[in-house]
Length: 462
Image (cartoon, rainbow, N blue to C red):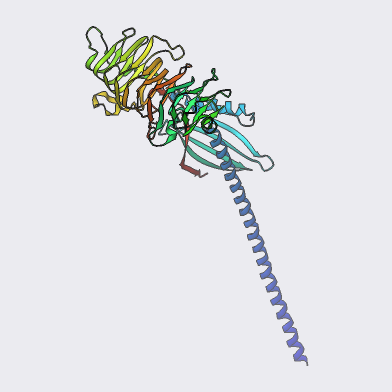
């Protein structure tokens, strides 16, 4: 009995020791699990803050992309002034929309957007910096830093400064004044009907469109004047429909007005090497290269004439082409866009054919890159009464008329800067080919826009 008691007491002691061991093990496990759990909670919290900081940067980037997408810099702006022009554009847009919590600072070398609050309670915000890239002055590097509490993350992207294609070149015909057609003129697109679309501003004349006879325009017509009263005869057609149906279905009245691109004849003066002398230079069966026609000469070119490079016509001048004229170049008139004169006229009565300056020889140098324009003559009236196979580029003047049997393919747009009506009279046949146009035709001051480069996206390690 005594032996059993001793054994029993020993077992109780062992059980107590085992119990204590297990208690210690489980306590250690509990402490370890609590420590791991606390660490995981802290890691999760840190990861959450990092994610929120990155989300703040993403939000800031989208804000910047939205506002930068509307930035337009005048093409005449010097590269050294690009940043200040961008800053002014951004601040003006923000002010126009009543946004006061976003400010724009520019010190000439960079643009900064100070902290913009996204969520005050959670201490979320972003700030941004814009500066030229180290290797390319025509590219901008934008760093957008997002903040959550004390954690920050930065996203870097690049924007390229590029000339913008002006919306006026999306039309076959664009005129500030009304458009009048009589007889049987035909306006068509070579590849599709939209190449023959027409834009009419006609701000000061409600009779913006008059189509009489058997006139035909394959595209649609957009008129900016909201009070315009178009007139289309029952035998004239727009978009394949005649009369009132053509007006109802293919004429859009009161469209937003489009600013016409600014012509810049002076950009071509450096190419001019020779001066036309009426006492020594013939006007028939001749070849002229990079020629300046002084004011008041009023030459009449007949016979077979080949014109190469720039034909720079000073104001005032009345210049006639009545023979076979082959032009591998650009005709420039330097009249006053705001004060067109009846003493400035370009008259084409013979057969005219043109080719791009890109086909000139190497001796013409950089001029071969000045593509997309055939005639740029602010302050001049341009009249076409003869036939042409191809006009290789934009026709732009302060008055434009086509009459008689004038016609052919126009690889570009016809732009009338004048307030007087542009007219198509007789058997005029214009076919517009705008399929493969130069982005910005030569001689027009382009707007500079910012193009986002998605391949440049990167998260900056901190």
